[in-house]
Image (cartoon, rainbow, N blue to C red; front, side, top):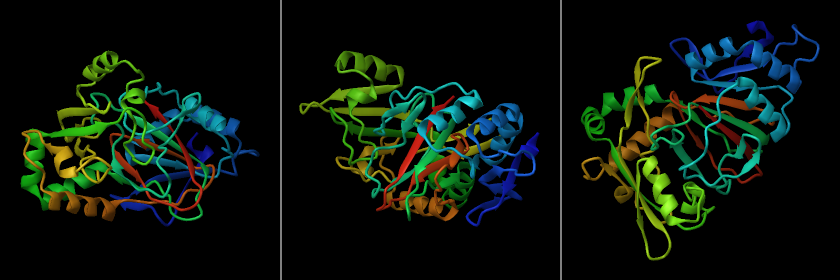
Length: 324
């Protein structure tokens, strides 16, 4: 049944141990007369689910390109076809809005702003297992969603900075971030506490935060300091039997946040800023940034892959869906 899809190569792919990253699937014109339609794609996903699950596990990310996915409704049908359980976006910090069904805006930060590499909801007790992205409006330049394999990053950083990684493994990190009362769309982590915890009641917010392992300290201006941790940073991916760099520890130059103070080791000692920026360079060196084409659907294993966003000055609309 895998011949319903055609695995193709594109210039931006990388190869690790002879495995392309990401895998790119397009319609196979030799197997059907209407290979590009949404209905054909969803039926093929259902019948080839074991193949797609195996491919995602092997590569960490799968890009579907060349299919007739045009709208948020089409994208929602594709997500539903995989049969994954929906992951509720409670406690996440990115400002986003529900579009239809299980589809949300990916991040409402203006498109000319960069978003640093991260695993989705890495600080929460439970994170999404799969992420879908869909390009509804492709930018004319820039605006890519760069991705990188987390275990490759762990291995490189451990090799170059073993003592730093040893301390991370021992202590984890503490995040002390400020949430304003309402959303700040100028920040990639600007979701206000009301929308973060889906309530306007402080006591309800505290209850919901506690379930996520978060402590809240209220401020006089109506905002709140959100303290999370210590959070494990180096995790073990049991299904692949390897350690991964599961964090959002770098690139937090955000309004109201000094990254040196906002993120510390779990023993409250400061992070070495120079090493943090070196880690960013390593991630950039290893990442893959594929220019979006309209209709692209990107499926990411959130345990295997970090993602971010490149800035663009042209219109861009990428939608998302979180699964578990």
